[in-house]
Amino acid sequence: MREVDTFERIECDSIRRLYIYGKDKGLIACRASINDEDILNTLTESLRELPERTNLKFRGIDRGNYSTRHYCVWCPYAQTPFISRELEEDGEAGWAFLRKNAELWNKMSDTLLSIAPRVYKDFMRYPLPNGLERLCGAWAGCVVNLGKDDPVQTKPHRDVKESIFGFSCVVPAGNYKGGALILYDLKMVIELAPGDMFFFPDSLIHHANEETFRNRSSIVAFTQENMFDYWKRKYNYINNKAK
Image (cartoon, rainbow, N blue to C red):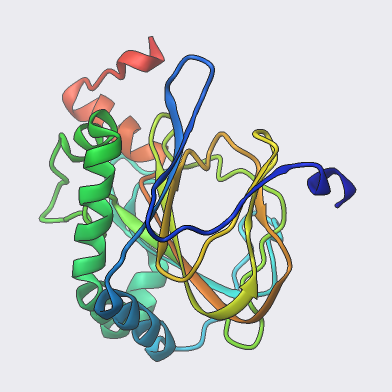
């Protein structure tokens, strides 16, 4: 924690967007605000309505004690994409959550298009098979992190299975204090208010949250790299950055 105390801290600002660029002038991350009380209220209320779920550890990785679930289309260890098990298990409750937050997915997608049009086009370029659709606008799905009495506070990690050359987007919600996003590789701490959208390559940057108090939940929209592997097999997709 002493190391983090030396990092640059960026305070909340609901008016101006925050852009973080690399030495090559390429965009690394962006913080923007939804600036729509109705969208934020819908997200907050729909999070409360979700059923309880035990936090499942992935390959024994412990990222915190909060409840988490994946509502997405992906294709790990498969030739074609499919609906995640957790969305199948939650059934109508999960699908209702996705429908209720349609305006949020649109807002996030429009913002992604404005800040990273190439990433947006890559995410949207190819169709999904068997009548499947992207579940969160430009993204194939989202992780839903429910804090409730145990606020979402992750441990340092990278989401190594997410798209390598894309952006995921985290949106916190609830009545909380703390919980700022620590970006270890950039030596920065980014404060996020409820309804902020933070776009960054979570597969490449080690990140975690600061200590959080009261009720903090979040959603993280993402597309996994295995979706691009599918598009490579199906459509001979080639990422120019990968060259």
